[in-house]
Amino acid sequence: MISEMYYLNEIVFGWGARERISDILSRLQVDRPLFVTDEGLLNSGLLKKIPAAEHVFSSVPTNPTEASVLAGLEMYREWKCDGVVAVGGGSPIDCAKCISLLVTHAPPLEKYAVIRGGLPLISSEKPPVIVLPTTSGTGSEVGRAALITFPNGEKLGIISRHMIPTVAVCDPELTIDLPPRLTAATGFDAISHCVETYSSPKFNPVADAIALDGLHRAWINLPLAYRGPQDREARSNMMMAALQGGLCFQKGLGLIHSLSHPLGGVSHLRLHHGTLNAVLLPHVLRFNSRECPEKMKSMAMAIGVHGGADVLAEACTSMMKELDLPLRLRDMGITQNDLDTIPAAAMHDHSTPTNPRMLTLADCHAVLASAW
Ligand SMILES: [Zn+2]
Image 1: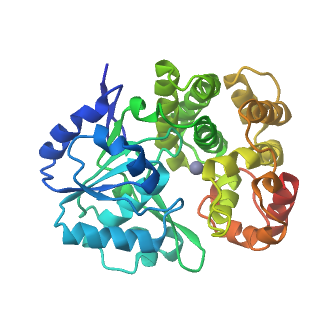
Image 2: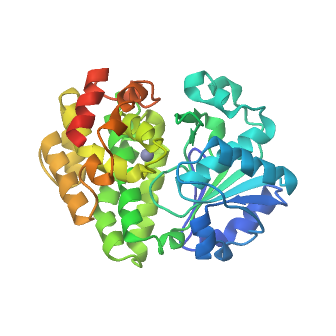
């Protein structure tokens, strides 16, 4: 069964939902869509499963760069496209959002970054963006943010409600070939969105309710999807949990993302965002625990354990072991030298103001050291 929902944008959700893409494009009067994906997905043949994928731009790296956005924009203009369809995980989705932005917004891209004061510069006058996620994690299909790495290594968030894709087409069948390692890592991204949203001190009980349900859903289904990639129900539930993470994280994320954003920008390491979040999660839970003990108990309850941040953190570590994820930053090939610039960058990250516990540079150093 395919469901239609409307919260922040239009969502078409269900097994085989991609078959609706031609109808959606014609309804939006898009005749020549630019499909944005990455090389891995292109080589896997997945695009063949999607109707109307003719003009394809696939040069999107893990952690999209400004250069990849500009290259995609060039193809958009050369092929005289009139809309963008992203197929992939967070990287092609974020790249597609920024291609659409620059079709009508003058460069440089950096001036639209939220920390550069770019929010009021972004208007709704942009070509439509349709998103088909192929992972269950980023929530970028319903998210306001696009994260782009700039030539100086900075990873900046371009954030506006006008960056929310026009339509999210969530077809869990597109995730059945996702390898277990990526299933685990992206699943932990979804979990970290629910945890950080719920912990955020902003008042938004609607987001809190979505976050707790998303956390519960991901917790039950992630091990099932990891062990049984063909499990349709587990795959559907993971895609829903990722969507829920994306629907609620407008309430603000926290220290996990403040640290994983700059770590993801360290170009010689090419670290996976979800894996970084998994490794940081138990340490940030313990660090934040004194600021929101009741919330820690509620989250523990949502995953079926009783206690506070310690119990919750231990449960996360056990789950990471079960899913064969690295437990420490050094297990990911990160050296102490790689960490030098991270605390200062984290202090400027757009997720930092909504961490439940106020952060100092020393705190960022300490949490990184404990996760290393
Ligand atoms: Zn994330």
